[in-house]
Image (tube, rainbow, N blue to C red):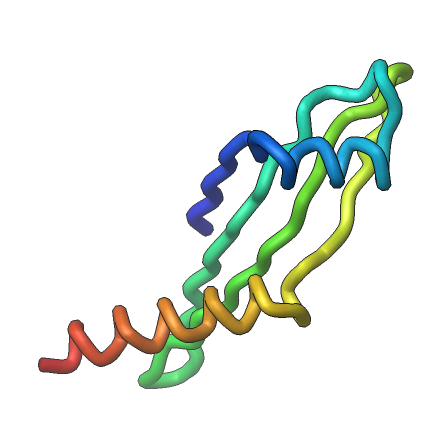
Length: 87
């Protein structure tokens, strides 16, 4: 599994912190993970996109964005990588 995290900055970060956290929450992070799973003679690739942060008392807060626009954009990127690898 490959996992990449990036802090959300500017307006996006502020919106998520207002919606999911409070003044004591950590800065929200965009988390993208890609998992490669061998299945017989093929390989399946699964992607996940989420935003998360840690609350004042250590609890994890966040939301899964895989089924929304971010998930569709991740799928397009994975298909482009696949097309490039098949050339």
